[in-house]
Figure 1 (spheres, rainbow, N blue to C red):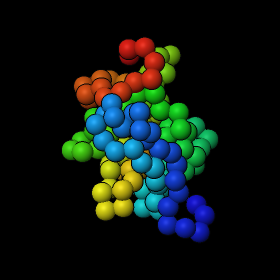
Figure 2: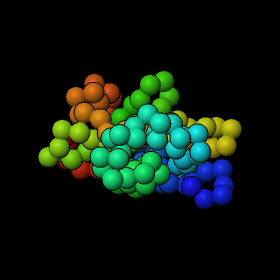
Figure 3: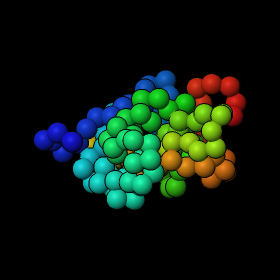
Figure 4: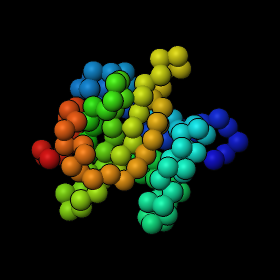
Length: 126
């Protein structure tokens, strides 16, 4: 990470924000979130040949599904119909700074997220 407190890694656009009934804004990953992802999921990311920040960026740029997370969080998901694992970033909107903060990012099985409410999807139904 560069010499700053956070990296802008993506955005929730106006179009998507209207559908998920939230605000459009930038998505940021701070040092705490990157450290968390590295600490909790380093083995999975190492197997993919990615560092935590690059993994987060892949998801926040390429997500094709959004599901409701815990409390007020949302899951950005890169879902591929040909794989049993999917990539997930959990975001929470921070009103004090008006941005979406990356809480965690991890590869995950489709079955875990199927029970989470679908808020938005880019392609045909999953």
